[in-house]
Image 1 (tube, one colour):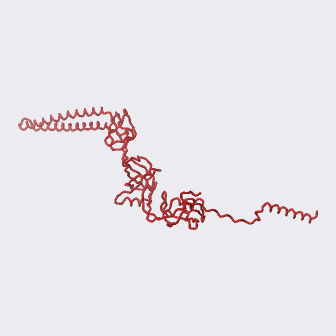
Image 2 (image 1 turned 30 degrees about the vertical axis):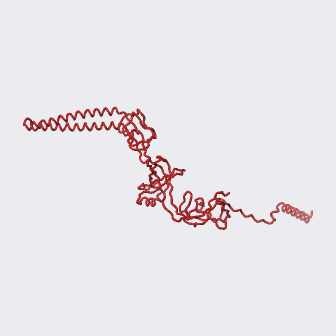
Image 3 (image 1 turned 180 degrees about the vertical axis):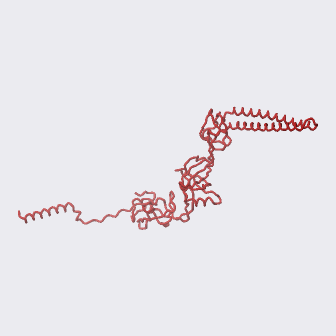
Length: 378
């Protein structure tokens, strides 16, 4: 085969391969079609408005009994009867427990007998002194005898006083056998039962809590301390608060009346206590609650729905809906953020429209299609 013939065959093969490849990939040489424009993104928008806004602080707190008393016996004894039911409402002075009074009654009887004896001795000694004073006036007895009898009468009077005090102590100990409620409130669980031995100032018998009114204690970050002090240093010396159970819709009124005298260095917070009437006993001691405080009033603040606020690498931003149905990404500075609304300190003006639903599909300059708020965007 000659060299020219081989070259011709190679040329024919190359042309054949090129033809096959061209017909297999026609799009390479076909004219490019223009890309279709992306459809507008359906969104829900809201208008920024000027409002007077209350700056609120919401903190988790805990209820405390206004008064709590742990009952203990003032004498050693044995429980005879328990007269209360667990969780019962009791009034001040109601009998809750009774210790066996037999020993105390016997001691009182003995003390009264001793008191009667010494009183009789004192009366006789006093009568002797009066008689001997009369005899001394007639010269029948000496001054020494009268002085001796006067000393005996004074000793008898002292003995009578001591026995009177002993009788009073025995009477008190007998009264201590009856244990009464020192305050009005709710009594807790039974901690002793009939037959149980109790030790003075040691054995816990019951716990009574006063829950009308009720304390609510909570800790506030120290950065709010100046505003709290300013509010509490007014003429009323109180600060309004609202109390709600977590997840509850009902708000209960309370008044902050106590602010601690120092900041907790370990947490950077300061303790406050509010007092609520709790007349219906909707709350009890030990519950977690949400405390709302009004720290300030903002006049003519720019307000938008809280759903419009988005978070990015550079901070908070919103999607602003423009008149040409596109969006602009706008950085904003939040003055106050609450459950349903946000106060914008910088970056947004009143009457501007912001996107509150459908932000996930948005980018800078994206086309939008505002829809009714009742219809959720796809």
